[in-house]
Amino acid sequence: VMLTGPLMSVIGNESVGSLLGYSSSSQITNCKNTGPVQGRENIGGLVGNSFSGQITNSINAGSVQGEQSTGGLVGGSGNSQISKSMNTGSVIGGKDTGGLIGSALYSTTQISNSINTGPVQGDNHTGGLVGKLSSSSSQVSGSINTGSVVGGNSTGGLAGYLRSGQISNSINTGYVSGRYEVGGLVGALYGISSAINNTISTGFISGNDDVGGLVGDAY
Image (cartoon, rainbow, N blue to C red; front, side, top):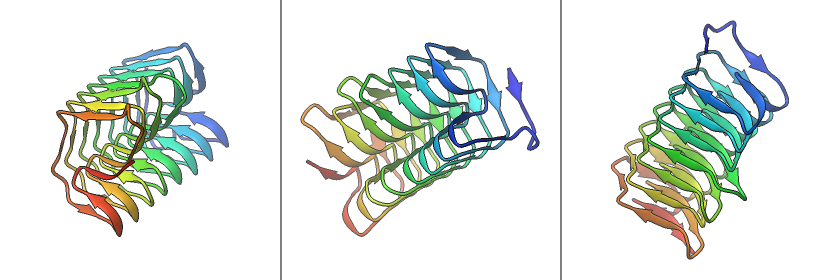
């Protein structure tokens, strides 16, 4: 499936995506969107709100704009998987903004072998791959961000806010700028079960307080 052209735009309020607004136990494979997506909450380039869904070998190249939980591929995620997929479009949001996923809360979300190259701009909890990742069994592995990341508090090259999740074998090369808790990989790292392994940041990092080449604040 391929949705192309600037006239193929999707505009709504909550749970807005180019393919699916709300997804439950769905599978998306070999799909591409190039049109803009715009809304308020749970706004994604492909899926607005995904629960127990899978996205594989798919691309968003359209711009994505929201106010909360805004992502290049998925706005809000629970118990979902993204693999071998890419966002190249710009992502502009408020709280919980990410190049691939805006917010992943409460249940397992996995991102593997995926890439964001688009610029990401948000407020608190802004990340090159995921804005807010908050689940003990959620994982990011083998994934890359090369896009610039500009946010507020808790801004990171890969994840803005990481609570009880894991990031491994991943890379950030993008510029990262925020206010407080700013890191090349993760802005705010919370919880004793959170972990970062075999992961690299080479991007320029800028912020006010609690600024680190890898992690802004770990507590």
